Image (tube, rainbow, N blue to C red; front, side):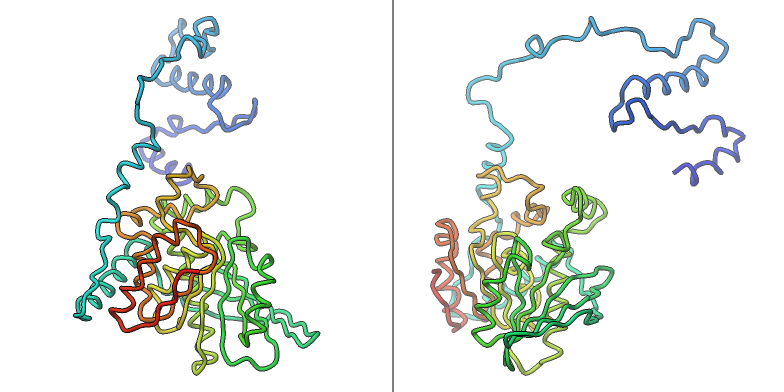
Length: 357
């Protein structure tokens, strides 16, 4: 900022009016006494130059500070909290919750296609191009593991490819705790004859920012992106890459947990050509659960996607997947209730619906 502003001040002959100060006492992020006195000095030099009565030292004021007990003002009975306000405002959401279950499939198709466009706008989805390099290979006990570095637009996404024998289909595997914690799920898919691509998208597993990753997610939102849209774009790009390698094979998307479950729903809603089926294990039943349980932003920043609940809840996102197969495993009661009614929607499309397990 100084580099950008200094030439402007120089043009006006006012370089002394632009200053910086580095605080070392105590050197924290707060505006404590040493910082304040540096500012007072700037005020004195600018507005009180030559005034012998001006002092840049702070006047002692500890005795004027009131205690927390003195400042405490009791709230009236029944006063609304931020949570109760949020619950009240979210009650009628999403705005277009009802699915057009009708024999006229054109109406249903129009709802789905228009919904996909709205979802793309809400999550600020981008279509990334990919470049992939294999960086390590291991083999043993009939299994083969290949580590890939996949460049997805400006992002680098870690991927491990697992195979047993000569599989005839592929699954892209996601997990809230990262790919290292999904060994049991990977074995299940391998034994079912799948090539497994275990992926850690942005802010998950190995792709987490080392410190304060929630602040990085906030910064993404501040500059116009959405963490959920970034994750969806990464996963969709990897699905297209995997499909291009084996175009004749089916490709499934499987996710374990509420975070990656939401990513999978968004990806499948936006990427129809590459993804043939979706399986969710222990997904969210509703975005409103975040408010009801006072979920912390730092634990799942992508779920707090601005404007998402206004347009879609989990059931409406799941409805965008039709006519492809959606399987729900280990749902909580909320998911069982919210998603259990999708059978009629699938029937409208003449598609198979597997009841929520």
